[in-house]
Image (tube, rainbow, N blue to C red; front, side, top):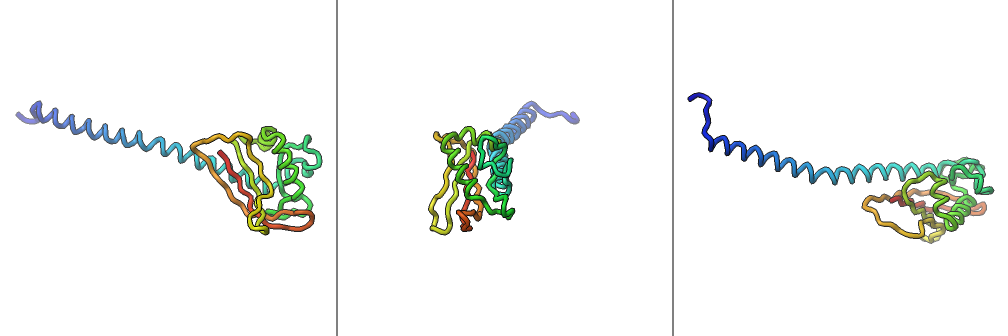
Length: 170
């Protein structure tokens, strides 16, 4: 009677094995959606930071796209005359805001963004007065969204002012 087990012992061990497999399967199935949402969130955060970096430190293509918006291939707010990091051109921001209010979809395509976005520039000198705002006409709610806040300087008619650029992507 070596290596023989009874039917009851076999059944007990199978039930315990199935219980462990079921428990771990349920735990994995509960973990996967959270993991996928975190991946989407991190990817969106990375894209939002790249967008903010391009807007702030790139003058755009051509360098003076604000003078002829129809010929613009890429939007960037960097002041090409001073060539300083995080110094934005007030003229480019004004043209961007005007064009965004007219046709948000065209600006979104020109920026090369697949997601909807909102761009707000707040003046730090006046205690938070919102000076520029670009957002879609209709808001959609998505589970994954991100916000990037960047401190910037901008040229306002020859006077350098400081503010905060807030980019929300969803």
